[in-house]
Length: 167
Image 1 (cartoon, rainbow, N blue to C red):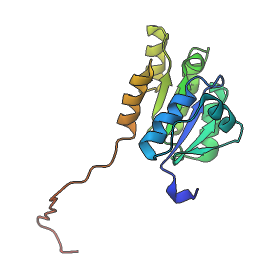
Image 2: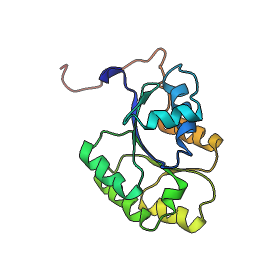
Image 3: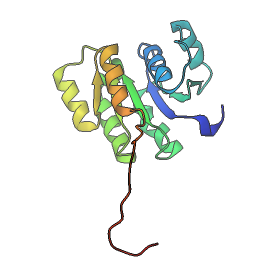
């Protein structure tokens, strides 16, 4: 896998491997024709540092408090998306970590996957900088299609320049 063939870099904060298998399958369908990965395959992929699955490079963090440092160490804009599993978002101090990340890279999309978050925690994380929430896989697929929309071709596009120099 060459650097130029990568389509996205995703930082995943999911220590119990609950959201990653579905996330990897969804993004693999979007960026390549690779078949879906088994749950066991996703666990094995996690053990090899930063696996590339379907033209998407994944970096893992087992603690939401370490996510801002990971992003800072790579420099912005390195990652295309940060995904938190809901148990990480429920932790005390999670909003502070999310806010720190927003200060490092304000344009980096952040998403929480998993149902059962209280409305208060959703509001807290939203104020801190999380823009996307998905309780179920269907919602996650929709949100990810918004984040990583397919490029569109404009047929019969015409560019017209009015005024100014010819250079």
